[in-house]
Amino acid sequence: MSYTGKAIRLERIIDRRTGRTVIVPMDHGMSLGPIKGLVDMSETVDRIAEGGANAVLGHIGLPLYGHRRYGRDIGLILHLSASTSLAPDPDNKVLITPVEDAIRMGADAVSVHINIGAATESEMLSNLGMVSSRCREWGMPLLAMMYPRGAKALPENLKENIKIASRAAAEAGVDIVKTSYTGDIDSFREVTRGCPVPVVVAGGPRMSTPRELLQMVYESIEAGAAGVAMGRNVFQAEDVCSMVRAIALVVHERYNADEALKELERPH
Image (cartoon, rainbow, N blue to C red; front, side, top):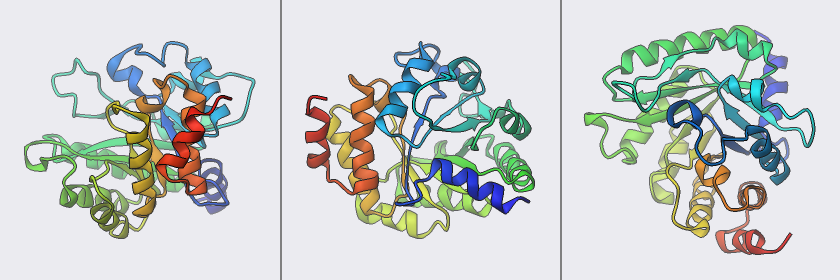
């Protein structure tokens, strides 16, 4: 394993100064099609980069068809697993891209999606273990999206379920865990303290107001999160660049929600 190679790659997606990260997932085209914000991927990546995000995340189509060849640099996390909304079981994520393709594409990290509690959990965990092993061999950082799903995992944001999902990823050897916010600082602090690798918070469905989003980011950081990984709440925002900038102020500069909202609403 190349420990130096892994360290260099991680530094491209995690800020050296703060030890935290702002990641914008753009993998929704696989499951939902060409939704708003993902029609012109190059333009969206450019706005995200200008806003100061540390990395974008997407399937292999993102670097193939969204590589800009201009503008501010930004880290790339290549997503290896997928399902569509039309599948018999959309919660069953299958591997569609090998780690080696991510290396060939110049990715700084890879990611997989695992639904803990789903009917096919065992197969997904098996895939996670295989990918984790390949990542250790190549010195490639691995992010795991870990969500409680299925009859035994309801409600999905229950503290105990999130704690199991997050810890399972760490036990499998991942470097970063992405999971849902539990709803309050105290319960999410139990998640971050119980997981020995950095935890980043997912954005989830579109929120009703920017302040609601920024408040969740603020509470997550206060609870020990290492950052956020937010997709639709960013790339479908009215001003993508400003939204990223506001989130980055909370994550990296410890602004509160109201302070960041003022920056978001300030003319640029």
